[in-house]
Length: 169
Ligand SMILES: CC(C)(COP(=O)(O)OP(=O)(O)OC[C@H]1O[C@@H](n2cnc3c(N)ncnc32)[C@H](O)[C@@H]1OP(=O)(O)O)[C@@H](O)C(=O)NCCC(=O)NCCS
Image (cartoon, rainbow, N blue to C red; front, side, top):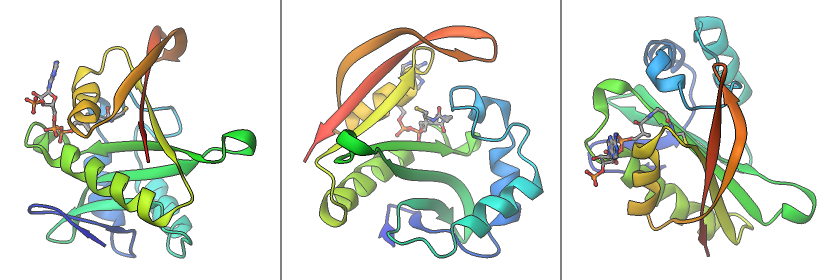
């Protein structure tokens, strides 16, 4: 468990389903996430997500919680094969809490956790071109933009560039 300023970054727990569904079911939250993030976000999807993460080892997917209500998520995904020392970081936050610095702090906490606890030498994030606030989060957390993969993404019918950010151990 990682302690933020007014929030916790912790593993997923039974009971998280209702607040997860409520805060994740928002078109503004899913707008620049991959299509793996359900939209609309049903209670059934929330149940499936929490259930699949109850026995994580190692712990790489976290809820962001305030007073035991899930207000966001942040996680690391291991790349494979020759890329296996690279982790991909992804995150989302309830819209009502945007702009307070929460995700910048959460990204810093999870980045430090990953380099201390996981066999990774690089963390990477892909940000869609229409998501400047996420680019700002990564820059404030010490990530560097390494390049732009032009027209590599289609999201909701629109072709977008992906901006690749990374931080090294
Ligand atoms: C992106 C997201 C995680 C940001 O979380 P947050 O807690 O609001 O981020 P922070 O408050 O730590 O920082 C946001 C920064 O973006 C800036 N920002 C906001 N809107 C902006 C815009 N249109 N253009 C440029 N910067 C912008 C803020 O001013 C702030 O920077 P500052 O501290 O220098 O002023 C949140 O908006 C979110 O969950 N979005 C939907 C999911 C998503 O896109 N996830 C990322 C996928 S890569």
